Length: 84
Image (cartoon, rainbow, N blue to C red):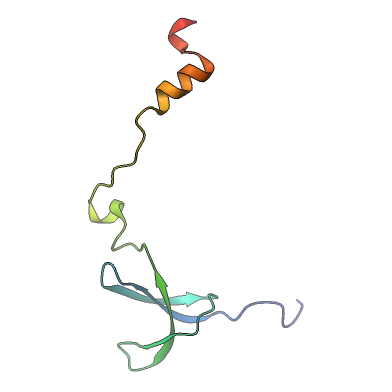
């Protein structure tokens, strides 16, 4: 195996500020920020927008996606299956 071509695989704290949730795992993500974890050690910190705590699948909250008119637009472009 070649040396010095792989990124540094180390413990990193990921923080989801929207859900006030953080977790410690190993990652190769690069970050300049650090945070003191529950065990008293300082780890690199990466901020994320969505985690298991804030994702609708896990929280049960439903997000509405604008899909109105997609089927009609498709049928106008390519024809309806009902007409065949």
